[in-house]
Length: 67
Image 1 (tube, rainbow, N blue to C red):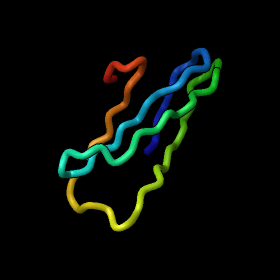
Image 2 (cartoon, rainbow, N blue to C red):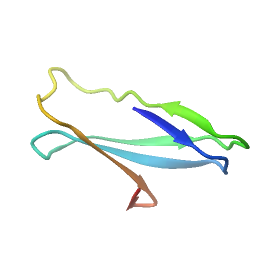
Image 3 (cartoon, rainbow, N blue to C red):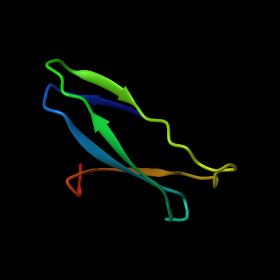
């Protein structure tokens, strides 16, 4: 997953990966470094294979609010 951030203080985001059956397959806290400029960050989750086929959903949470 590719994420882009604006300038700001150090914080973290929670990423929730939901499989096609609606089951939470992963939950990750992703640190976001302090930056004076825009930045780009990637996140590659670690899942057991094979993955469930179909459309997956990712929810980004900041202080438990969906963003």
